[in-house]
Image 1 (cartoon, rainbow, N blue to C red):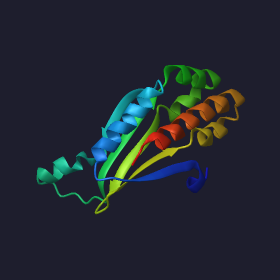
Image 2 (cartoon, one colour):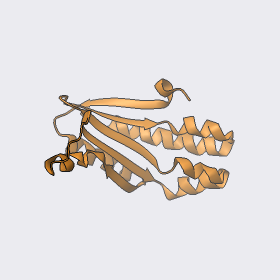
Image 3 (cartoon, rainbow, N blue to C red):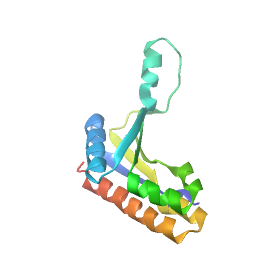
Image 4 (tube, rainbow, N blue to C red):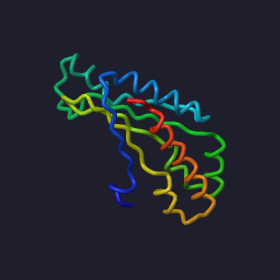
Length: 140
């Protein structure tokens, strides 16, 4: 894998991080994907408020995990080990002292090449196209 080629990272200038996150979730769900979890890594601020000393290099950081049961079933049917890369995810983050938010993801086709399976690759192509369209629909 080549990180510079296999990770997509889009930037959005916005002061409304939560609005961007909400719009991302809406676009994901509009494509028949189910949000399985949103990890709030930036809850570290709760620790700071509790008096626990923590050094962080970001203002906001979320991991949005999602799947489509049909695609999931097809991937697993192609190779039972494919589940190690599921569900797919976007990371949504904002660096300290910046208004630009980033949304990044690992291209499903990048991990699909590890399995050398045509059927798995075809499903990965469709998922990657959906993920790319989601980011294109965000108007920020």
